[in-house]
Image (tube, rainbow, N blue to C red; front, side):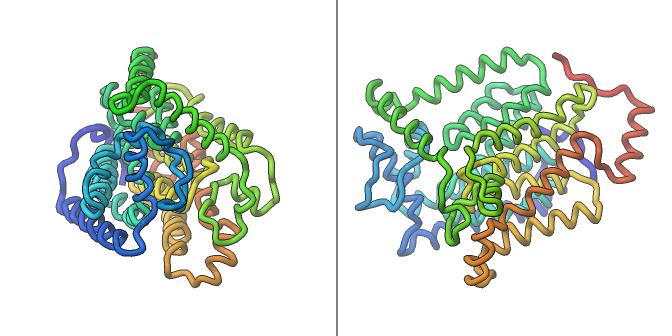
Length: 408
């Protein structure tokens, strides 16, 4: 099953399978919202709701509020403002709307970057991970969907839409800005850089609709302090029961006792992610660009030092896009099954609690299958790993057509 290049970034007619999957995602969002608003309610959603209240009332978004919250708010002031539609509604309708937005963004993103049949497969594979993220009222599924929507917009040369999607994701969590690397494939790069800069400024200033300049400056100062604290390695990685898995950085600490700062590992990760681009424009086919998107989604988790269990929904959606767009091969299926079982199933209630705490969390097993998968993705981007059928297809294209050139 190969990718149909012209479908990337264009409207995909909904087949029967896609309509059923859309219904599944919508029903799941409603069921999760009803479930997670029952006592005890999901605390993340309460934190997000309170953040909007704290913003408009002039309170410090990043202070501790132990009377009403079990954790502190760690997102941008812009996200606190954008959460207004969900905070102003009563809890249940607000949670339903939030879950529907997250699920709908994933559905829209996947169906914009993949043709109908592989899109249905990717959505089916990613469903359980998206449900897990919605159960925690988290933002990971939303960010993954925004990355894909932004990528599709770049493919269609819709620069303002691309910037809006990616920068919105960046003001929810910082890592979606990694998707801006996709701009290298397209024309008018300097114009896009200006569009991104304008979008960043507008997004950063949005809270001025409800608070004055000096108050917004104070909020950004507090946000920077929170991010600085999060950049310090935590001793609780791999001690059992922790929710922070921290990708490859967590594995290095739990398995090898590594305590160096995060940035050297993350710098190596960025270099490995971007390295296949040296192959040049002749290699930047639609299939290459889609594989690079999938790799970027997995990268956002593997090299995120604050990756929690729900964060892995982003990597699973990346793996699902990669698998659905690829030709079938037993080893690809094996990688996908391993990720689905270890990342999704094993972190659910199916896993006995003694094994979950004593081994799965202690040794951060959730990350393990994603590491070789990502290395395979990078090998494919380098052109080093291909099935016999794919190699034959490459030979035919090189013989019969002129390679696609991307303008500078």
